[in-house]
Length: 481
Image (cartoon, rainbow, N blue to C red; front, side, top):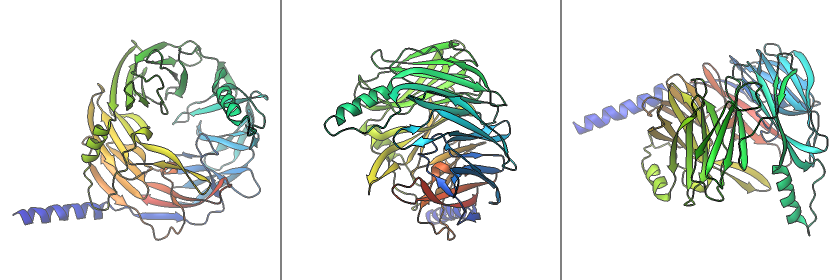
């Protein structure tokens, strides 16, 4: 009887993996363009349309270009553009690209930004205009916000105290110069939020009244409202303010107690909006008063100023407990890379069908042969109910993972592995290890730039063209779900 049960179980798992194996349906091996590295296109280098994807790429005899590939891997159009590409997104059923007018290796990009509006179907340039002219003397830090449905486009700019000049430190005063540069760069002289209409004209420009705190982060919600959070470590609190469209004064500011260490070492702050109006989430990893790494997640109701928070402290014992709970589906699943808690960071946060999805992984940089590489570990998936109580956790062993929510499933891809997880149960319904005979690139799958289309996904395989090159060789592989 035991042998029969074992055979049936083995047959079930075998059928699961065979039936759900990915099918390769398209490949582009030698395109006429190269991908511009993500460190250059600072706020994204691709956007998914309904059944196609548009990418910022590099071509000969042009500063850069935008190419669009349809869901059959056919190149629809290629439009050369000028300037230094900064961002790409959807706007009013078109493709919108933002570029700085110029860039210097030592002085960074200029503070003059041009917008290119391209027809989504043909790539025809519908309009190009300068949308922002900032300081000529000081460095500004821009941010660009696109609605997923293309309904709005906003930008924000932080004016620093750091001058736009060649920053080369002499050996004797190098340390002092570096400290001053860092202080000047972190200092905020002014902060502006700008809203644009369908003609790319500035409709409003405001300088918001900021919550008190030492450092701050900003995000734009799906309804166009603006969220700014500040960290006040000395008073052990995080303040979050919600600004309605065109309002400099926040609708409400909510302060939440957090047990920060006096040197909290906070990771990147992540925001997401609820499907319910005036409810937002915030998440980050920080060092607490016990010098332990902890994840903080809070659900904030800006109607009445209430909040509900969850915290997970990653002690060595807790990390070991999490790792021991991992049960791979088959022998091909890799070993978990989830132990360097000092490098833990939030990757994704999203509300879906009343539940909150939060993923976390190791994220750090390493240097090899004069090149800097971004390294990531396995993905921890946490799901919380509407009261911010943990529902379950799950691991995806592949490193560098990116996720996509679809109805009742979570799609995940990382370093050659594709998985689908049932969001209701937290169980994986498929995990496939992708190996393509047609991809002969020396590069690796770039999960961060994967494109999720309606019936397929496209994986870019990228390889650097050299230590000092901003270009990457690229091949594209298309797989069905």
